[in-house]
Length: 170
Image (tube, rainbow, N blue to C red; front, top):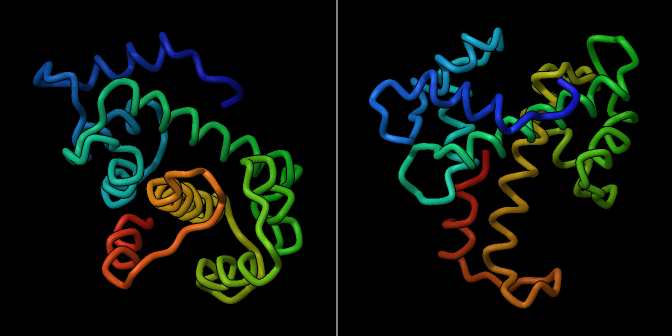
């Protein structure tokens, strides 16, 4: 998946935009994945739409679709680089893989994220597990950035704001 050709991604988008609206809902996105040979479920498609929909309309425009495609490509590349042909990475490998995506977490935050996504408590993560972790961090960063208007790296939230921000986490 190295590199994303925006022109090809746009053509792909247009091929599944059945109603010509210029927007893809989760079902159309799932169809795009099927055409591309990507085995993502409808539930995953809904999560991707929620994570990359910047307008709040539960649909992706072509630019959001290209951004999602870049994200999926980057996640796959980071996982492949660290896994070195294995089907999993270990918890010890996770910081290196996440750093390739621009995420550097302190040990406590990293441990909490890994524990949340280690569903079989094995200490290893398959590509789909790593994708869930990456999507969680993507949505967490997006929510944080919305409240960090001064770009200081620090925010204050009241309870309602916390609930609002958490509702966007994948």
